[in-house]
Image (cartoon, each protein chain N blue to C red):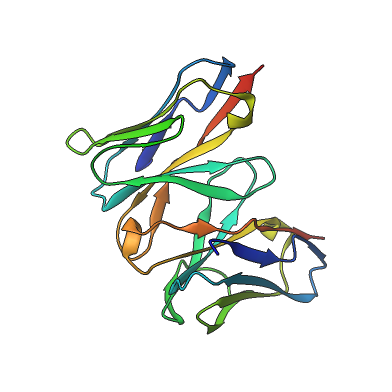
Length: 108
Length: 114
């Protein structure tokens, strides 16, 4: 069993839909990161959180430390949101443990 | 400036070649990272430099040789690579605060070994 599990692995939705991507982890963490990777390579850090909730534009990230679970929500989804979303947990010593990623496709 | 730059963007090399990948940041970050990413897989950590000293080597084969000449630059020297080393190589930087520091990633170098 991976230390960081994401679901779903693939998600296809229509433009405008509310999107939820889930991340569960089984190890102690110092922080949880949500990353976005578009086709072509570059990775962008969306959120880093250790408790509660953060919001940036149409993106919302929540974390429940007791349940070892985090969610990434996208409101009013748009085709440009199509990307791979990666959950990663920090375990100290500068190491991140990555989930397998969720491939999101938003159709117009 | 919140950018991490990497050169070259693409690299094709033979198994007997020697080449280098370069990474640069001017955010004052004192931790820098090399990751390897195969298609449809998450990044795999290769090396971490903290204050210009190698702090983590994830049992990477010696045909990959990292170098951190100063706090802004990170190199990855490549020699006698194998076709299975073909991948996207990503550089990242952060403040050296452990896993609770936001990492800034470069666009990557797509390496093909023939």
